[in-house]
Length: 164
Image (cartoon, rainbow, N blue to C red; front, side, top):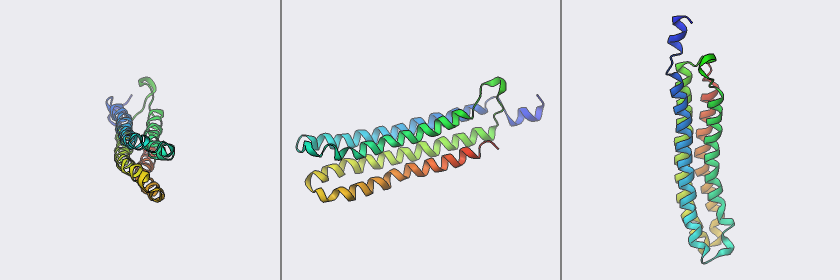
């Protein structure tokens, strides 16, 4: 191995790729868990008064779960680019790109999960009192969900450019 190659592919470069996987999964699942828990509190609150509304009120919980799927997709893609040490040629550039990829998906998923949780909690409580609010609640939830989707799109673009 020549010295030019070892400068471009230092032994610590895969750490940044693994950190990208950890950031994507940790922050993405944190947002999904918050959205699920906060929305679930609202659903449990209305379930005692109007059990017939529970199934329609599960939309925020499902949307929160999709945030974790975005994180999982990007984590699997990053892991697919990494190989064990003997045949690994992993550059520092690729490591930083994978870290940025994981952070963009994870942090945007965290923000989206927070938005979905807050809107889902208050939305289902308002839906119990006034059924006409349902369409508006779903539209607001979609705009919250799209924040995580934007992070996934940026992460996918970064992942395609990480190989060189």
